[in-house]
Structure formats: C-alpha cells, structure tokens
Image (cartoon, rainbow, N blue to C red; front, side, top):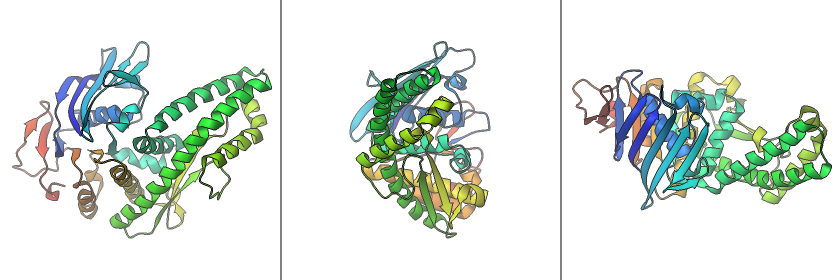
Length: 370
C-alpha cells in the first residue's frame, strides 16, 4: 500500500505531499487540474516509466531542470522508501530503494501498480512495443529478476548493433555478443511465455464475466520460436534463438541491426477467432484491454500476499452502466484504489479533503457513485 507520496517539479506540480490512505479514493476536479498527472507520478514510481507516451524530459515542470518522485510503501509487512529522480540537462535517471541505487523498474516489486485509462486501447490498436512493455511489466511484477535481464539484454543488443553498424568485424567478436544475447534473451522469452499463458487464462475468465460476446484468446508472436511450438523450457528457447540469429545473419549485416529476438516480438489478441485489432469494435477492444488489466491484478494477487495498487484514470466515463457495475464489483475487493473523475459524484456528496485548490478528495462508499 502506498502510504505517502511526494512530487517535486513533476508535470504541473511544483511540490505536492499526500497520504492516500486505503480504500477507494476519488480525485474529482475539472480537466487540466492535474488528476491524471498525479496518477502518472504514482505509476511511474511503481513501474519505472510513464503510462502515457511521453519522454522523461516532457515530465519536468516548466522552468525546472529536474523532477523527483518519492513514496513510502508498506508491502507484505515491510516498509520501503522509493525514489526516482531525473536530471534534465544530463538526461540521467536514478532509482533508489531504501537509499540504495536500483535498476530502472526495480521498484515494481515493492509497489506493484495496475492502471486503467482510456489509453488502454493502445494495447490492442498500438505498436508492438507498447504490448511488449505491458507484458514485461507484468512479468517483472511477479518475477523481479526479469528487470535485470531486460536491462542486460538491452545493453548486449546495443553492443551487437554497434558492431553491425560498424560493418567490419571479426566473426569471433560477433559470436561473443551472440552467445550473451542468446543466454539472456532465452530467459526473457521463457518468462514472458509462462506469464503470458497465465495472463490469458485469467483474461478469458474476466472477459466472460464482462461480456458474453465470444471467447477471448491471445498469441505470443515471435520470429525466434518456431510457430506452434509447445516446448516450455529455457534450453529450447536458447537453441531456437541461436538458430534464428544464424538464419538472419546476412540480413542483419545488410540492415546493420539485429532483426530477431524478444525485442521484436509481439502479442495478438483474438475474439471469436478474429484478430481484435482489425475486426473488433472499439467497445469490444476496450473490454479486452480492461480484461487484460483485471487479469494482471488477479495474477499479482495470486503471487503476492497483498493486492496491487489500482489506478483508474477516468475509465468509467468510457463504459455504460452495466459494465461500470461489473468493473466496480471486480475492483472494489482491492485494498487500495485511486480513481479520477470530472463529475460523476452526486450533488450534495461531501468531500473528505482537498488535495489542491482544484482537486477534491472523496471516499467512495458504494457502486452507486460509479
């Protein structure tokens, strides 16, 4: 549970200190008041990146040259002090847990977060990188070692690509980077596939509770693994990745880049046997994205003794009354939920606090608010 939050020069906040508390907290205020920015700060602290498509430099408050996000978290009976600091001039980011430096994304094991927002449609409609990042977040939240492997893989991939761009190299040099890339990449693929299978099993159950309009399915697409493969061990993925690199060696040398590996993989979702990105309505795509996020929350609850922090960025305005009720029933069991809205509260509802001059705080009591 997030016990307190500090923002300094983040988005529209020069300085903000807040103790969210448990239960279902609603932030109500006009557009442009900073409600979504606050949720983005919380998500960034837990995930290590902004959930909206923005570069770190765009998150720095106008006129400032850095931002800092700090939070105190109580998780499984232990307290963690988390911090992410970004320096604009050097474009350098530092992550700290209890004062010690950590890798980007390392905080997710201490503060698992799940966010719902209108932008979740990009999980269906957007670029493959968005889907990979979502899956890697889920994997890291349940298996923290994944963050270190992603970091190592990125560094090795950069070195291999630099060698390819140089154009002249000894075969032994390339073989060294190939061996390292295969070793780390096989672990990345293995975890992704294992977690994705569980995620889809849970997503099918959630989608069936939200809609009776067909069965949801998903496929992990990779040029590294043979199509239709049922193998589930790391040694197999290592051999498959090594063979794929060998097959594409001439193409890689011609294009001066590594064209196969987990950094090129994708996820595809299907409803009634048809690919959701091309054949489903926007309403169906939204329900699929919601099902994936609810499944993420269920998965985290099954591997940790406490629930993830749920963030809802104006999601309910996108849903009809029936689906609002079903989504609320799923989320209301969670220990800590923070939602934003512009106007769904009834006239006469009394605020329990004032976060800023424009943002009022409410404690939700029942689904009639939604």
